Structure formats: C-alpha cells, structure tokens
Length: 472
Image (cartoon, rainbow, N blue to C red):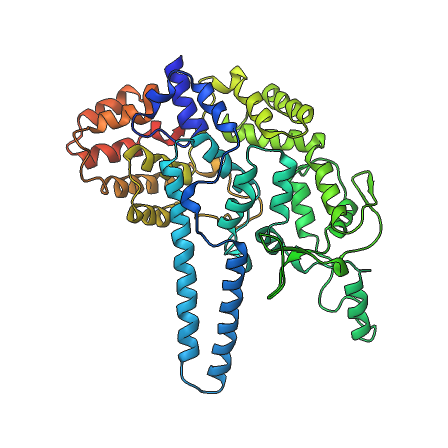
C-alpha cells in the first residue's frame, strides 16, 4: 500500500515522478505532501523577472511606437518608426516565451510537486487568457505575484491579491469601471453638457460577476443580478496605475473619484464602508461564505481526486473551510487525511500540461530547447499556456481531453519528446517506466518496454501508454 500511496502522492497530487523520486517519498507519502504546505519563498529562478509595473511600461511604450508608426505611414515617411515598433513587439514576445519556458522549467525540476500543482490549480481557477491583448503580459506575473505567495495561506488573502492584480482588472475590464454617481461620472456629464452622464465610460460588471460565479460562490448559490450590480459598484475605482502614476508594488491603484458613493447591499448583507474598503469587505465575506466553501472544495476535490469526487469528502473539506475561515492548508489536509483520496478509483486523466510536465520530469529533460518545443506542442494539443479563452479556465475532466484526435496527437508528442533523449546513461525504457509509474506500471506496458528496439522507441511507448495518461 505504501508504494501505491507514494505513486499517488507524486503522480496525482504532484506533477509526476522524476528519477528516484518514488523511493524518496515511499517512507511517508502523506508526510511528504503535508510538508509542502508550509510557507515558502518564491523559486529563485524567478529572481530578476519583470514585475507587472515593468510590463505595464513596456506595453505603453509599444503603444507609443505603434502610434508613431501610424503617423509616419500616413505622412509617407520612411519605415524607421515601423521598424522600431516591430523590434519592440518582437522583444516583448520573446520575453514572454522565455518566461513561459522558465515557468515550465520550475515545474519540471521542482522537488515540491504538490505545491507546484496547487499553484497551477489556482492559476486556472483565477484564469485570465492571453488572447485578450490588454491582459496578455500579465498572466504569468499574476501567477508569480498574486497566486504563489498565497497558495498556503488564507483564501481571503489569495482572493484579494488576485482581484486587485492588473492582470485581472484589465482582463475583466474593471480598470475603466466608474460609478454612475461618482465624481468622475458627474464631472464627465458636466463636460458633456449633461447629454451623456458617463461619457464613454460607466459601470462594468464583468469582474464582479466572475468573482461570484467562478471565483467564490458558484453559479447556483442563489444570488441575483442586483447583487452582481451592487458588488460591481463596490469595486468601482479599483484600477491600474497610469503612466507616471504611483501604484502599489503590482501597479494597483484605487481611484476615489471613480468609486460609487453610498452603502451597498450584496447577497443579503449591507456594506457601509467607504471607498476601497467597501470592496475589500465584500470579498472577505464571500471568502468565508458556505457557498464558496462548497463550490471551491468541489473544484479542489475534482482536480486532485476524481472527476466526480465523493460527496462526503467534499463536505468534509467544506466543513474544514468554514471552521478555519478559509485557511487553505487546513482544507488541503482534510482532503489528504480522507481515505477516499487514496482509493484506486481516485485518479485523473492528464491535461496536456500535466502530460508534458510529467513527461519531461520522467525523462529528466529540462533544457531551454526542450521547454520551448513543449510550449509549442502543448498549444497543438489544445492547452496553450495561459490561453483558456474563457474566465472559466481550462476544463478539468477526462471528457475535455480524451478525444481520439487528442490521443493521436499525444502519440506524436511522445515521439517528439523521445527524440530529445540521446543518452540514458545506461538506463533502459523499462527502468524509466518503473521510476515514473511505480506500481502503476502494468504488465502489458512493461513487456512492450522490454521489447523496444531502441531507447527512443521505448520512451515513446512509455509516454504514449494508457498508464502514463492518468494521474493515478
């Protein structure tokens, strides 16, 4: 049983076994997981990366170059401005690709796979999609700045950090939201001679709606449209620093003139706080609401245990949530301490991201060329990094990823990864399979690995095998 639990700890709760990892964990699988719930510094690999304020400056500088390029083109001048714009855009794109590859490398080499999986879970829970250009620079920084520091803290802190991050504020359009009766709206109406009270701006409900529907309560919690509108009013003024404007470390600013004055009533509770504190108070209430405890506990259990997790397990997690006021390690512990989490039926089909990270870990591949290849292959399998195309994030059940075409593409991806392996330093595909899957390596796959005619063929067979497609 211990060997089975070790395989589950590393492969299902973690990111997949690297060479020798199953033996390291075998003595105390649950203890290995629980030890990762302590506060920890950010990976040193991220030191020196641009922060959100830096990216915001880059984005605005590119906008200026784009404007200059248009003006030069209109005047029939040379293409120096256009060349400068192209170079700046290319440098920005290369920087983004390098950060994505670095993010994957951190996952591939990590010795705390459970913690890294928690980061990925929350990053998808609070999804922003880079296909919206205004938010494209901030997905990876939001994960670094708002999610990583709080995955083993209180949900209320995580929630507040995410919703105030420029990535979320720009993605869901709250940066331009102003209250109908705010000073900014009144001044705009005066400038327009009273013809248009709000000018071209007004209240935007996107962020408020997604916070309630996706991030906290869940769609079936019983709130009404009026609750969404009132919450949207409570977070008016939550915005992003303009050029030469001082914001906090992540470029968040609160604009009092854009905030809707007066008390707000959201989901049966009245909030009389002033300014920025009003939205913060609503978030704190939502963070510990029973509907949030139930909704997010179900999402966690679905991600780690099974597509349809045992209801009793979810209830125990939700109870731990409420008793601890959303202390996430307490909720994780309730999940790990439940025997249902360790049953053979508890398994998950790998998403493309799971597949690639576990494959690189199994093969010991971590070079920049390998990671850049994987970023491209992952997009071909339907899960481009930080691009779910919806605030709901990527799907998290087998039906989302197990179609025939997707499986065929995995076979091709397995071959592409296997070709990167030139020397296994005396190891064999069978030994690689045993190290990666442990007790999950079935007899049929083991026989195929023994009979492989080359290292590359054997590794491709392992990575394409049914056993490797599951986090068991």
